Length: 609
Image (tube, rainbow, N blue to C red; front, side, top):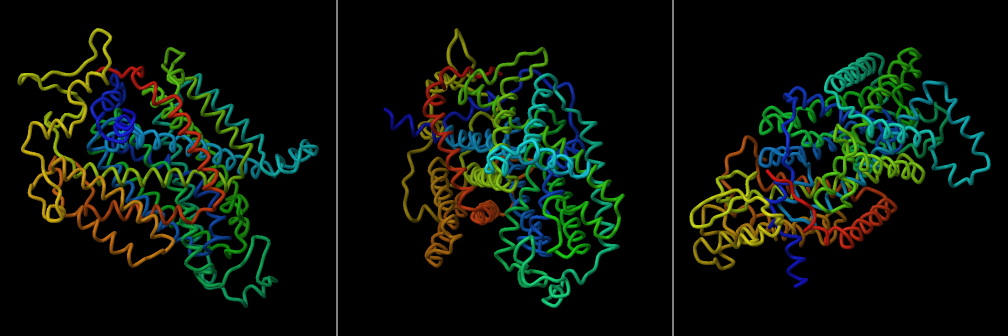
């Protein structure tokens, strides 16, 4: 009955069907090389984070220790990137974390992941649009907001504080452009990436030349000489030295700095356009993360060497740093480079958002009208318009830093789910269809055939008739059912994964994610560490899937668990208000799913191979 239906939603019974749904009906005319994917990854990642948030973190959260914050954030990003890389090698089809979660954990978790992705990137679009407006206003001499203030004199103060109508207009304009024309151009992406790389390299070199190492060793005497008595217009000055705000400041700053790395995972949305996705996607992810980590480290070091951290501008720190050393022309060069980079970031975020909306709509989890295309170029106009309107509404409601925190919660949660998926999938039994995950095969009297829709039949029904649960099919055709014992947990009898060992890993991974979450507030630390160690040992002792892949996450299960732990620690640094807003959005997603998506599954119309 209803209980079995709910269990099926959180299981992996629809693996073949959902993979089929993500296969492209037509091959892409252009193929992307590894260099193209690296350029895309760097372009996706280098954006508002390095140009605008560095000032917020350095001046108010970490001081010169911002370089450590970026290293911690890059660690989380690298760990997540390794998990994405294995999944892209195992399931080489477009779909990002949504597909990967569907493959491993089932439909309900896939919906949660996809909904997280949508609201996170909508918030990202809004935040980057606000950042672009700051840079543009700086370029024209701060005239924009002065004019806005005179126009909005009669608007209530609470709206005036959070509203940026110029950024909202920019988002709606770009939404209209995307609805009429597919803007994606690898050549433009490479040019913008090159410009951004040159501008930031110029800033790094200038900072190391004009910087003063004493800015990393400030004391109370320096504050007194500057005419400051413990506080400034930017907030408390901290305790001086390299880490003026202590270890909590580093953790809070690392959580904010993670925003600068958001976007690398979008490489997996271009899997079907890659020349050799099993190799080029993992390499593209790892190389782009490494390049961006070096750039962020250099920029943050140069910034804090050029300007004492308490004097760093929180809105547009890089141009103001050049003004601090009397290089006015250089400040305009940097802000112009930032405008171009952030402009493409807005387009990338809108593109990623409407792509996810369209995919989920085709799958029946969102309103099917959102998947319709209305032009000869197959552009999902409704999905684009909805994503643009959602971003415009967020601009009206939240400030830049609130949008940043809002996006961080969703992305960190998504990365944690992907790490959990890697743990689960690596320990699942090998499939009997020869490893071709793109084909759904049926065993009927020894003959194998592709499962297709026939006479208007429904693919979900076909899959149900063919056994429904893959694990159950294997149990029926294999040896007698295994028994779960304490000895079997640490000394499994089979050298290869079995349905029982797969379920053990599934349960242990879920419990570990919960315990790691409880560990961050340091509650009952000793007991939790014992439980975590025990569950990790159980997972480690289970046999792994021996399927050969071009890339696998090393040191399983430690690295995925470390990824989850780091992500959870960063999420715990975010404000309570951020969690409340995020919770409201998640609840609205559940209302949509249980009110619509769960009932529309049989009518979702899976694509044929």
